[in-house]
Image (cartoon, rainbow, N blue to C red; front, side, top):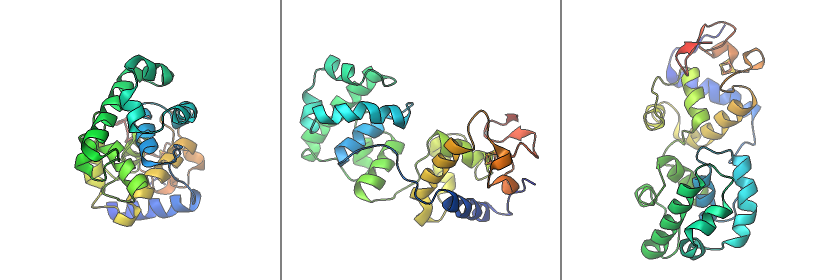
Length: 227
Ligand code: SF4
């Protein structure tokens, strides 16, 4: 079938209802025990799997306790401690700089506003949204990672391409109470079924309402190219 509902609002509601059923307990998969650890873990996770980040932070968080530990670390030493992570040199620089700002401007505490967070080195809107949602219980937007980007396009919820524009496009269409869980639901479905290269449309619970279903359609709306 692969026929989406008439409006984007209705499509979003139906998609979310079904994914809540499929993945009732889904949540963030990064390990952390305080706001600073959350911030560091999310900064490390850019272009890197959560699984790898969790392996690295298991030791990193034993060694570094607070913002001062990171800010005072030698660049080479911190880079060495995270060297199995993508872009570890840049990430070490960003973490040291962000932690210096946290000490100088925020009394050593991770700030709780979008503008203060995105003023920190290496912290974009996506990272800030995750820290606000899971560190401060503040939901200001929708975290658009690679899975949310791909699935929202495939499912006909947006035609935008950049994460920032996708977020702005989805916010009026998705009820605010679902903003946080949408990300985790899409990540779970993206990992389990709707992978980038080879989605399992034949076992997908969204197949009958998906305008990219390989069983019915020629084009993957995420890429705009033929399957
Ligand atoms: S697995 Fe296939 S049917 Fe399911 S959401 Fe992805 S593209 Fe659509």
